[in-house]
Length: 184
Image (cartoon, rainbow, N blue to C red):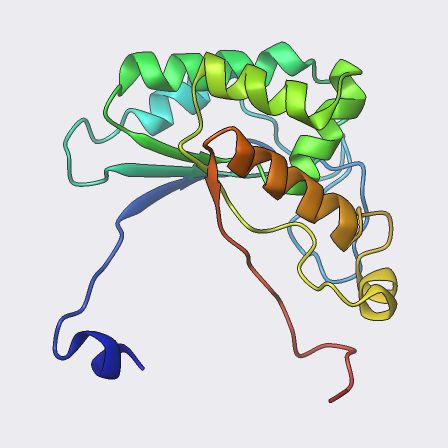
């Protein structure tokens, strides 16, 4: 496919990926990443550590930083705003791809505001250059409910992405498959 579209040209995107926590309120069947607070291997990075990690190396070799993590209880919305502001201050030229639709919905619950207000606050505070696609993973309700118990369904995922697009925030979609779905 690449050759049919671009010939011999190949493009790479060098990205620093930061998972700022693995402490999650959800318990998705497929996820080996999440931990419960206090469980062995659980971690939560302070904002300063996230900013420091995003700032390395201070060269244009990595023009993009991707950040996504877990839906953590007890973390205020200001944490995420401070994270974006700090990264943008440390590396103003950096494209930040942060916060899945699932995280955005989680932020609406934490901040008690609508997804449009969350996205506007993030855009005005950071801004994230784009949203990663993870979170819903599969848009068929039967498969989704079996594998991703407790996560928002496709309708909320699409609502977050449509709202982001209306605010000038780009996004992509990520789909995991090969688990419980049928050929249909």
